[in-house]
Every structure is written in C-alpha cells, then in structure tokens.
Image (cartoon, rainbow, N blue to C red; front, side, top):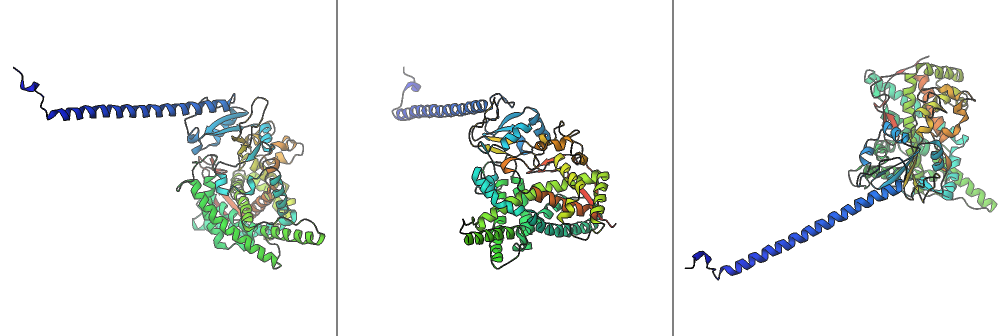
Length: 522
C-alpha cells in the first residue's frame, strides 16, 4: 500500500523545481558576494600592506613610529598639537619621521639641519602648511622659489628702506595711541577685571597693518570686516588639516575669508594707482610701491633702459595678503608675549621705563621717531629676548621638490614635507645659558654666546626666504611697547594656563593673557 504522503502531485513538481532553482541561485549569489567581499578585503589588505611598506621604506633608519596608523597616520595627534609633543618629537632625533594622511613628514631639530633646509632652494621650497596654497592662493609670491622668488623679492625690498619705515612709523604711533585709549576705556567699563588681550591685540595689529599697507585706500568698515573674518584664516593654517576644502571645514571657511579680504585689497591697489597717477604723496606701503614703479618707468623711458615690471591689482593684493598673514599672526603673538613678559618681570619693566625717560625726556605725547628707537638698546634687547624665548613661529614647513640628500645617511624622498624647527635652536643651552629664563641682558654684551652665534637666532628664518619685514617688525614692536610702558600700567592675572602654550598658526598663552590696564601719569 502506498502512503498518501509518498505520492507526488503533478502540480507540486514545478514549485519544487523553482525552489531548487532559487536555492541554487541564492547559493551562487552568496558565493559571488563572498567572492566580492573576499576580493575587496584582499585588495584593502594589500593596500594597507603597501602603505606600511612605503612608509617603512621612506622612514629608513629615522626615529619615529615603526608603523603608521592606516590612512590617517598621526592626524589625531595633530588635531590638538602641543609644544610638549613637539619637544618630544625634537628630542627623538636630529631628524625624525611621521606620516599624516599619506603626507610623509621629516622633522629637523638641530640648527645644522634646520639651516640646511632653509638654505637649499634647489631641493626644497616653502609650503607653509598643507592648506596654505588653498588659503593664500597658489600663485602667491611666497610660494615662488629660485630666481623667480629672488627677482620678486628684489622688487619689494624698496618697501622696507629706512625712509619708507619712517613713514610707516608715523602711522603705527598714531594707531597705537588710539587703541591704548580704547583699552583703558574698556578696563574702566569692566571695573578693571582682567580680560584676555588675544583679540584686542589682533585688532590693533590688523588696524595698524592695513593702514600701513593700504593707507586711506581702504575704508574703516573694510578693516573691521577683514579683522572679523581673518581669525578663520588663522585657524585653518595649522600644520595638518582635513585635506578637502568642504563646506563647514576650517579650510573652506578660510578660503571664503580670503576672498573677502582680497577683494578689498585689490580695490585698494586700484585706488592707489589712481591716487599716485594724480600726483599723490606717499603715505603708505602701496603708495611707496606704485611710486617706485612710476619713477623707475620714467627713468627707463628717459634713459632708454628696460621698463620695470608692472603689477596688476590682483598681484598687489596677494602680496599685501601675505604681509597681512605675517603681521597679523606672528606680530600678535610677539606683542602679546611682550605684555606678559613685562608684567611678569617688573624689574625689567622699570628698566625699559627708565630708558624711555632718558630718550624721550618725559614728553610722551610726541610721536616716536626712528632716531628715538635707535637710542633704545635695552628695549630692543627685551624685544629680541621675548621673541627668542617665545618665538611666534616654531617651525616652517617646506616641501622636497626632488630627493634631498640632507645628510650622509638619509635622503628626504621627493614630495615629502620637510620641516626645519626654529624653537630648538633658540633654546640651545650651549648658546643661551638658562634658555628658559627671560634675560634681555644676554644681548647687551657683545661677547656673549648669544651674540657670538647669530646663526642660532632663527626667529625670522634664514636663507632666501628669510622674513622680508624684519626691521618693520622690530620697529612696530618697539613703538607699541615704548608707548605702552610710558602711557599705561598693567596687571597680569596669572592662571594655571598662563605658562601653557596654545599652538594655532603661531603660539599664544593658553589662557589668552589676562591683563588689566590703568592710565600712567608721570
């Protein structure tokens, strides 16, 4: 007898066939998916192995992590850089290596290797930071190298002659006094509760810079707009940043701010050319620049010589933008630390004041002149020491344009970032005994080890890209501090973060430097 359950109904045959076909299809799909996943994992694994192999090959015998974190490398560490972290990196070796987002980086910590990088334009060019070309524009003159850079720089040297600096000093003195009056007024309004001077000093520098650079060719409201937006540029110019300029990122915000600033600077250049063409006198840097070109052109026509290079509004705007970057961040850092150092060392403050009494005869309402600054050796020593102990720029990233034989045992691979570190040279105990102590007197002795080793004083860099505005910087800081110690008293409220360092594009006191100002009447 055949059981009912054993009988196969004709109608059930197709469904069984379909079921078997579906099972086979699912198995094939599953096998195909598994193969794709396996192939993908194999490819990813191969890429990760390749990444590690390339990193190890580039690193060679240099100190640094044996392996790099896949894809991002040391990106997490670079999000919040600290001076202590960099000191550990410098202490790891004369040359050391790391990788961030596949950017291979070699860091030099000694004076020898740092100067070699700064003085090797045939092998390395400044890139500032990875995002710099996006923010400051790739065609900016600061990214030129070799003869092109030398020729461009030669044209700009006339903007920093003593005659030109004397014109700028009149502007610097006037604006400095104006801002000090505002600081004193604000101190009264907040009942003399110490306030951070981070942004008040930055605005003083922005106002000074734009008036020195552009004169009356830029309106007051534009200065406020540029100042309010420029902080975004500062925040984006970190050593390492998110590599894509996507909306909402620091680099994207900086690019928008640069567009705003550059539009005003280009318009100022246009107005300046019209002003000088109409017979205007020199009152700012742009005036000096256009006047120099005009006079060189007239001389060339008269003598039948080569006509000077003309600069369009965009080129002039980019140059001023680069000067603004230097004056805004590095100068702000330098001035803020000067205020903090003088507050923390009252005996040094009193020596500066005594020198002001001698040089200015108590007539502090009269504008400062270059001759006066020439007769302020102690103030100049204080400025030099303040910049040494807290250099605004601790390192200046370069890019190796080709394999760079930096030493007998190591060649920096082409397209790597190679970074000369300035801070270690400025704190070398063999050159600066007690390097962390604020000792301006070390600069007053011609026979001191500090004066005997000028190659270590790298505050302004070295080589063909050494800061073009060295004298401008020193004069501006002297003007600010000479007037400050003569016109005001200030009190520094120390916090646990007062001696900590905040590293942005340049360095600042971690607590923003909290000061209270009161008027000084001698």
